[in-house]
Image (tube, rainbow, N blue to C red; front, side, top):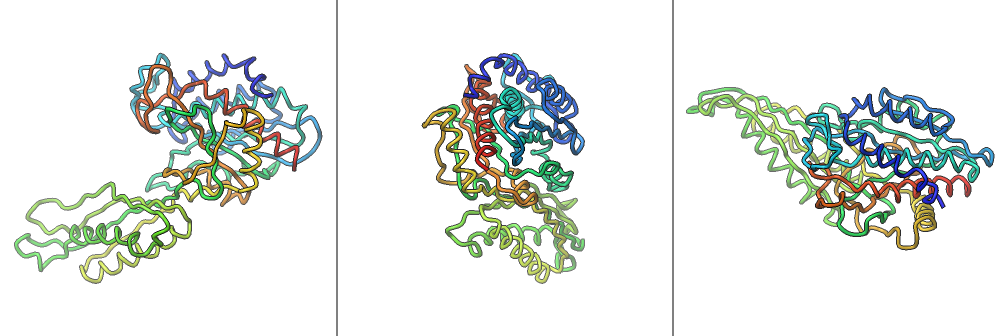
Length: 401
């Protein structure tokens, strides 16, 4: 069993997790993190270790039972612009930067899985490819793609070609520590980022008919896009819009000639995402006609819904249960509301994938906090579950395909 292999070097992995947590780095700037990852992978005996797309790292481990397919395991490595408030002894020393999403645990778990697989390469055929991905948190209105897009663009799924792939994310929970939440089909929301720039005409506030009010036009857009979900999306589907930023105007007695707002739509079907886009453009065209303003729409499709492959999810379930026990995983009834750029490996890379959520308690003496919260610090013990499970999934896939 792989968990017994991990026991031999678990203290080293726990210390490594503290290092990553202490020195977090923002998206696409994970230089020190990447350097440590490559050093450790070479130390463990990976067959190849290469930097891919700047701070990304890809390594391979060849099985000792002969040629076969290639299975990918992915871990994200970036931190967030959050000031830590956990009070743990190994708290971030990089001011204003924190592993508030638990990616330090993800990095360490994948490194531990790599070490397990290197020591147990005589138990599988084919190749395991380890993908340490930068910039999962990197999407913004100015840059809609996260690191997965760029890693696939840079060829991380080739040489050798990855035939299937798995990943996971910690899920803050007071119960069921170490249990895996599986989901067939869509398991995360997709999202699109919007910027609305409205151009009007100034006039004196006492004579608004002589101007074209950009703020009023933008206000109409904001109200009307709320109706897209209510009146154009199937009520059995789910979607949500949030307008998070708005600004415009210069003085209270001047009809404003410019206003801008930023919004995000989330949905659980990529087809629903297309409907929202079409109607958003229609809304803006209509407001242009009645307001006389010009509306510039900057729509950046963000992360699509992660869609899990049924067969690969079932295989993962069997592998996890064989490694960790019958009660180690369950099927989720609904997708999670967050988004993940892991979708790129399936949609852009064209391979079957599965993504899991693992219930995770906080470090001892701390309370459960949400992801991206300044007080979230997962229990390092989670590595005892995630690393053996990921190794088990890879080995089972390679030996059965």
